[in-house]
Length: 216
Image (cartoon, rainbow, N blue to C red; front, side, top):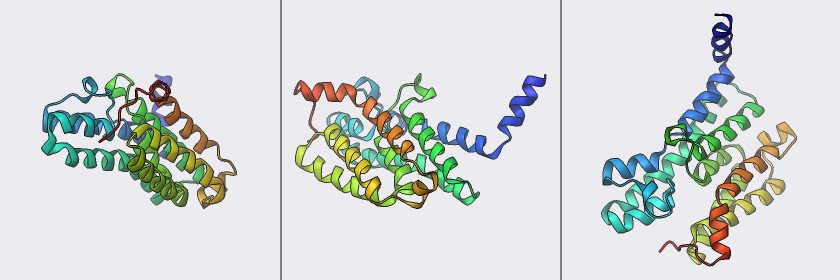
């Protein structure tokens, strides 16, 4: 009984509630849900098997072309917002920057390792962009521009995402935000970058083998 009471006491803390909300909300696999509900397609069994916007676009262009763009945009928007929204809630509650960064990390982890999908998930690009756009807006905006241009030129989503990620890391040192300066460290950005990089290892292997698919 004492253990149960201890757990209830811990959960009652505002920060813990925010952490749980961040992880669980980010764990919602919107790409999988939208494709399944509106097109009757399980994107985990098609294309690259990923639940992110790129695979939603790739699969639906072939299986349900009339829905491809709409569901891709919806997937990207929802995956971006699901991390950012909890940070905004935390800001409204007066949370410190350390709390905001931990929420950001948990959001990316939730998207990449969703309990609703057996702790599988996406690659964290959209959700990572969402949280970083709030916490380091200038580097995030620079990164999204570079990602967009690279995507247009190279037509390879994974490579353009990695280029955008590298750009963000560099830009965060040139244009640090107040939330970054408040913690006197770049560790959270590096951890988020590592998670995204780790999830892209299969893509990197295919890139070296020249087997990575293009988005056309």
